[in-house]
Image (tube, rainbow, N blue to C red; front, side, top):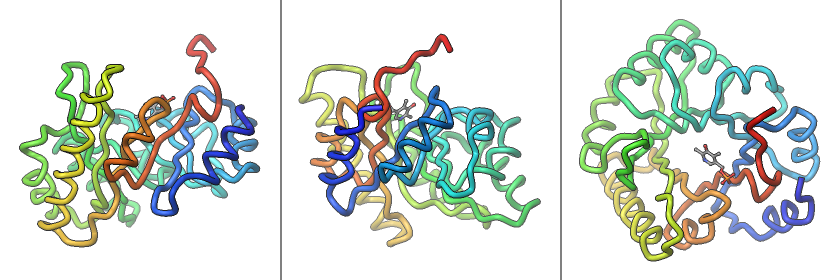
Length: 215
Ligand SMILES: *Cc1c(COP(=O)(O)O)cnc(C)c1O
């Protein structure tokens, strides 16, 4: 855990930007340590991992691609699903939330970089997708999420973030203030994301150090 860096980020983030501490591959002890430093919301990309570390004191966001057979557990434990990326997933979340009488806060993941291996709703389809999701009473769409392009080229990253910001504003115009979260920015690009209107950053490596996927 990068204690000084974590403290610094918690102190220096603008007040309109929420920090999600991405705790995938980290132990519950590391999550507890981050909590003691002031982190309150944790991001996991696998449901099993979230369930294993679950602690009702903390707020949990699912940020990774969600398979439909995991939705039943996901809606039980997650406080927000940031990675709504298909209509079939929306239908399944609706179905499982109806069973437990829960309204699920969600963000629509947008495939902004149009890289082939990326999930998400296409930019052009996003407004329509949100419109169609209005039929689901157990989904509360609160905004948009994206993963920036995999490049070191700052201009390309900024162009992506700027078009996300434009889309976010369009969604606010279309659906009103219920759309209030723009989740964009990770360890390598969160400062650029904030410059382009991000209201939620998802930071893993910069807080916890490099991930070891072999454990
Ligand atoms: C892993 C992950 C992050 C955090 O990435 P870092 O580069 O470690 O900050 C953020 N968002 C998503 C969707 C992730 O999967």
